[in-house]
Length: 261
Image 1 (cartoon, one colour):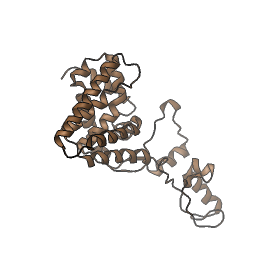
Image 2 (cartoon, rainbow, N blue to C red):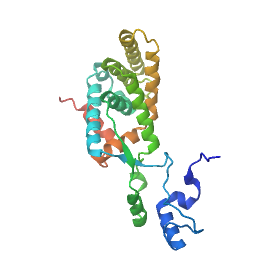
Image 3 (cartoon, rainbow, N blue to C red):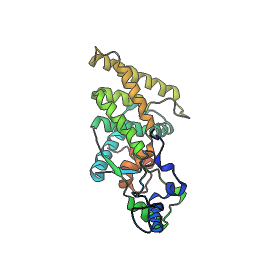
Image 4 (tube, rainbow, N blue to C red):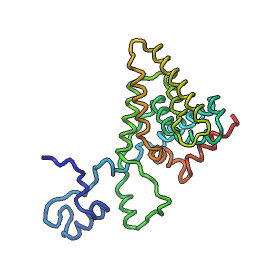
């Protein structure tokens, strides 16, 4: 029977530093390609999606497209009269809660596609050999294949729905006005705005697709997948190469509260 568990779990040292482990094993066995028992062995590479760190294949092109989507996302929020009526604290709380789901909806609407590849192994080895450990406060969550797979699955679901611009707009409204965000001063007002957006979405779905009564529920079900993609994944995958060590949320706040056109 095939073992469905992660192959990386066979040995603590091998789990922690797989590349260095293989180098040392080859040195101890007296030659490359053989382990201590004389068996042929290929360099160990973790294939577990949870541990596989990845990066963009075309970072300059994709990051440019992603940045354009992010700018449109913030402008969409700024141009909502109801959003501007909220207290600044509520605007901040809603932005913090919804920017990543809104950005994913923007990626889907603009049909931004991308590919990823494994982070080069030699950079990992260099970090091990030079003992260049980052300080805990500077550590970032590296994009993994598992996280990217969730994102790409979500995008494909939206593409299969083929939403119209109006459907996207009202769905974004239901995402922005989330009354479940903690410590909202105008929670009841936000709840009313979400209900209005959901009602408007339902009406436009019925108008555009009168023979598909299940479409509205499918849209909301697909939208629930947005919460499965973490903001840190979005930040590290699409924006860290552009903004360096800057705080993306602070940059978004600057964009949101800059009222000059």
